[in-house]
Amino acid sequence: MDMSFSDEEVTDILRLLKKVSGRTENSIYADVFLFALSTGMRAGEILELKFSDVKFEDEQAVFNVTKARQGLSMYIHLPDLAFDIIQRRRSQNPNDTYVFESNTNRSKGNPISRISVHRKFKEVGGMVQKKITFNSLRHHYVTYALKEFQDPVGLRLDTTPSKKMTKLYSR
Image 1 (tube, rainbow, N blue to C red):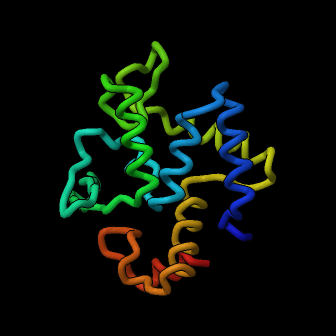
Image 2 (cartoon, rainbow, N blue to C red; image 1 turned 90 degrees about the horizontal axis):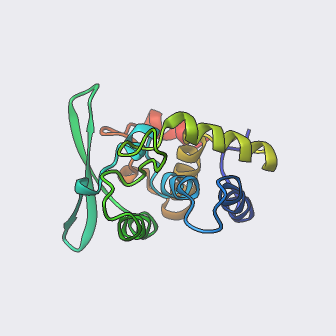
């Protein structure tokens, strides 16, 4: 099964994510989708990202992701699209702690729930006949990067990317 997304599919998915969230612009679900698509990050890394984690080094935006299970930290350079999402969300939500913070009364002050994101991805995936998961977005990221740059060495997959992992994600 092809886990990458065509430009048309991405456009349709973004439109539908905005529609199912009741927003014509700036849907948190559309932003999470684009952020995952452009960074290849895992669900937990994205949903736990705080505005305070984003730093500037050598004219590039980077952020620190701590992998609790492994006790490791890694710095990831953000592509322009991901950085634009962070900047826009920061200007629209100046009091939020998390980049993708829930705005419901029950969960205010917490990141949007993984279950909520998965539910919207599944709903829209059914509409476009495509499986949308964080894993499929990681596959798309790697497939696109390999086509574009032809060099898996600098690809951000994990703290220690291996040839085996790169091959697995670039199917």
